Length: 275
Image (cartoon, rainbow, N blue to C red; front, top):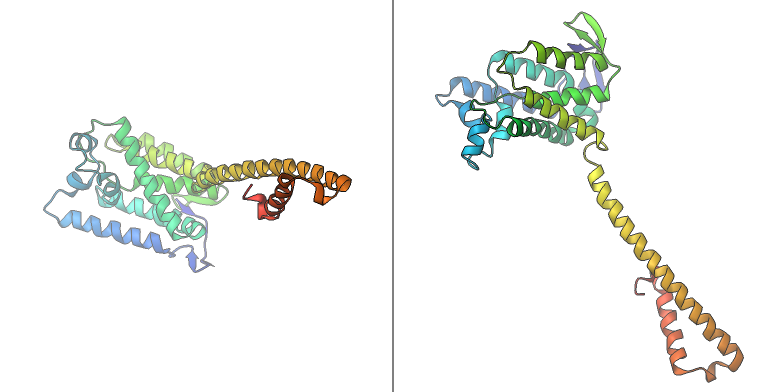
């Protein structure tokens, strides 16, 4: 699949189109490429150590706490890394442009961690390592599906299809035709995290919004309490002023005099904060 975009577009420093690349995408491509070369050259079985092996993760906890992060930078074969990185470049570049680099990187890592989490929860006895960025890539695909549903993709570089249909079709076909060694739970976990990440008020904004709402409610409650207190003070002030009109200020009690002085200070204080 490829996006229908036969020319380069310059968007805020990013060149969107064939041949374009954005900062985080570039670093991810380089990092994954270097790790793949190290895997090929190393005498150590890197997937055994840095791939996600649920059975080992639990049995030797917490020695392998790093695996849910490191597994997404390892790949089993050249085709595995090629297609993952191709999809990352093809779909991730424009997302990074719209979200900016740091939020996109956070999203990518969270989707990869989501894939690891689902695998750990539902396949805790798995004894062989899970490797690959596919969980994060599925998250990128879900984000692209939400952001550009009417964008046209060319399936096999020939058949045009809207993103809203092409990406779900790709997911279904990949599930049906892939072999038994494919970590479908990691794919699903990444996709679910992406779905939640986007639907929950875009990039978790609902969480700070919730705290902000709670703070506003507390402020409003305090303001209402102060308003009621101010009304009570004013009622008594009015009664004292009526008394002054009747008998003169020199004939009111010391208590009333003190209350008027205190009330003047309190009511002149901004937002009645000292009430």
